[in-house]
Length: 137
Ligand SMILES: [Zn+2]
Image 1 (cartoon, rainbow, N blue to C red):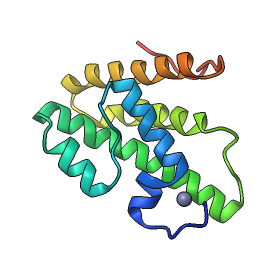
Image 2 (image 1 turned 45 degrees about the horizontal axis):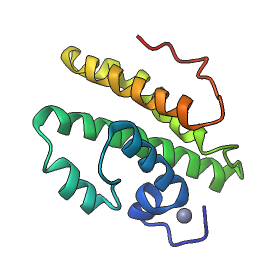
Image 3 (image 1 turned 60 degrees about the vertical axis):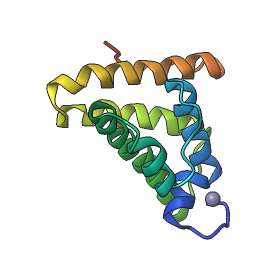
């Protein structure tokens, strides 16, 4: 999207929109830093997490990576660029909602709390954008 060589690390962690998404997660979940690469995500985030947090982080990774990948594809194949970086966050939250049914029932409370944290950061950090399509518990 930015003209840099498209590697997995670049698309999912280092491109400007990816950095925005992960910094948004960092701020929402009170992480001390945001992941910089697949290796960093595995080493610094997954390996130090307990089983429950590891499952959440893998789920979140899927939502973030899929959002970024689709945004990248829309730009590359249809020449459509998102109107705002917030769109990426809204899509992450949307995927969290859609894919929640694929998770264990006992994990859904954690996911609902995570969605609320992201939505709260969105409403607080941005420009008054509402999330009208989200129904948070
Ligand atoms: Zn890039």
